[in-house]
Length: 416
Image (cartoon, rainbow, N blue to C red; front, side, top):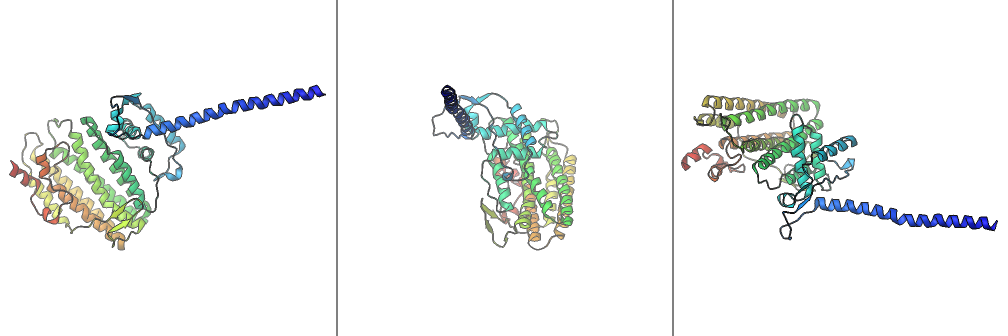
């Protein structure tokens, strides 16, 4: 009996000893894994400045570090787990190489997070048909890039976080022409995504009759925007197809400017619709910034149309450009598309009341002002351009007196 008890005691003690011996190993493995995750995170977001002695020619590993974003933390609708897994797999599959120069990651860009987000868009968008059309993927990838902790007290805050993320991503140095072209295209593409997202939210928050009018207005906007693209290619393009390596950068530039105008046409209206901001007060302090209402002297629609005609009359034969008749026809078609868009905005305005109507009409005036300046500048200043050309351009913050001044072609003649 005593011997049996002794055997039991020895067996229990052995189990206890084995258990104690195995726990440190298990704990150590978990700690190592956690440490590796922390190291990956640190490396992914590490920023190196010029004040630190760094070997910029050193090759460093290329990798993704995916953040686990809670569903409630997404700025807009959260993707499914299946979508996230698929997108992560696509990005990792498209990773260009195993290593990269440190200068590309932490000098041209800020860190690996910045570098990989740009590369993912550069590699994945071309596989989507049409180009970059999977908006859910793009929104998710921007959320992965954006490490801010969101504090959303208003729709203005929500879209300001969205805008900050886009601006932060596009803030990097591009040295080769193909990189400049992609950067310009990315700015345009993301701005249009911003605009479409705001429009969808505006439609969702509006009563049915206004929603239907907004959908019609958007179709008119898309028609005008597409016609501007076509007009620019004909007016400033080369009929022989010798537009040069920076041509796509110029196209993206004017379309980005126009997409910013689209934002102008929506933002004040949307924030008044959803946030009921006090627009009698010029500045609305927010968690993330200061909201500014843009107000200007009224620009009548007829003034914009007269500038369109003045632009047409300024067109002359050029060795490399399309024939004058074709260029004037393109500009006339664009003017008609513009008038249709403005007509649809008038229809929307007729369905609004109070503060929302005031903000919508004010936005329309701001749009007309920007278009007037674009026309005065004769669609110049995009892509790679000279200092002389830039000196003849009217800035978007031009005073009313400057708006009454000479157009680009009149200033240019004085320089010749």
